[in-house]
Image (tube, rainbow, N blue to C red):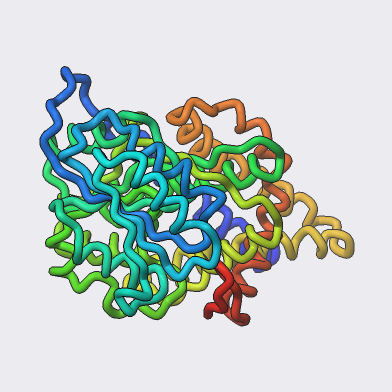
Length: 377
């Protein structure tokens, strides 16, 4: 057996063990106990940073104001980040229609800020309530979203909560994104449960306002295009490791739409991956590099097998092990969202995922990209 084959099998085993550890971590995340609904008690400031979100903002705002929760215990702050479309106009119209709901539209230019992190920080400084619910302008949710968060906070002390996010999907392109994101969500949730957090999503993130300023908010990474979620998670966990958790409650699910085109997908993923070398915890970077090298070895063995036939076996074992390990985790997460049938698409999507990881991993770190009509690094 050649040294290269030994290296490939070693990476394959290590990758499978890592994913299986996350799978076990996901299974051990406790679901909320069934109690009579706790009376609403906690107040929430819901923050929605928005830039050119005219297509989505109405559905987002409507889902929030329909919450089965006392109007006096939540406010909605939409931070308009220099939108050039009708985003602000739509929000203002809804605010006029529902005077009983505390909706505030803040314009970034009036506060002298620009960019998502600066907008979020400015909005938090004006928030009324102790807990911040951060979400995206393209997200919707059920009417018991705040109830689920409120009940969790009444039964468990928390400084930061990562709550579930699901990609609603209609076609194969969107469903493949949903599968990938389920894997990322499962890993992020499991890593928090295992006390070694790595990733989360600002689409459904709840945290203590006082703690946000205590840790310095986004100081140190404010100039990065991404990381308004993960770097915050790491900072809070460093001070309060026992008060950071994933809320495994179906009522707390937020739904968002996957990217509608390949260009949008690549731009978004490049933005996500661009922070991969900026983590303070080098363990996370090492894991990302190891996963990249593992996928590269699969790619290399596929093409090298045309010249060295013995590598076909290595390639097949690698792709099969990868699919089985990831399939266990993804299927477990899909079951939580009651979307288990999507797992049948995994064999079709898996080969393309290898190529996608390789391309995005390089592309995100060597070239500028655009997001919301802004050029970013």
